[in-house]
Length: 180
Image (cartoon, rainbow, N blue to C red; front, side):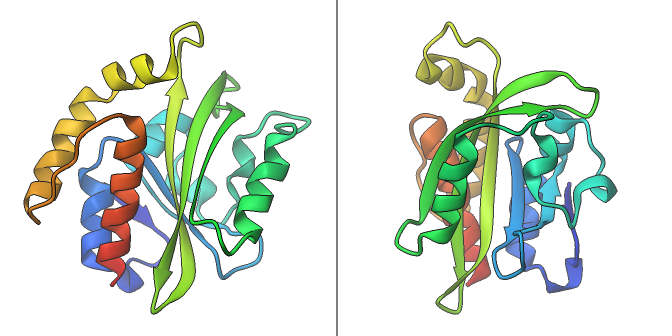
């Protein structure tokens, strides 16, 4: 299930992508001040502990611990402000609604509509064991999600292989196609 600020303005394909994905997904409105969240899926609610009405219309900084997230915030702001960069990857300290801290591996992709960046797709992955390599951790943790994504993309004759980066990138590609 996906939660959208304005479901009437959301392309059906994008809504379906959010509903079918087990990966935590968010959409932020790039055209509005402070890039507020305008959509998320159930996996994001499960990851964060927040209900849609608690975060739609807010910047995702609400997940940061008291005192902020440190230097990664500048890197994220630089990414958002740089029109030449389409994708970014960030490890950021976050807190769930109940106060439980976690490391969040966030992939952000700028999505264009009619040639202009209009949305930022976020794919979030909780880092549960920082002693394992990220590749091993996410290859194992996302195996089921890759299978689900392959089923979705096979409907359009796409093939998706690889790691968590391929999964996040694939969601961005599918979202972009469904906006067009």
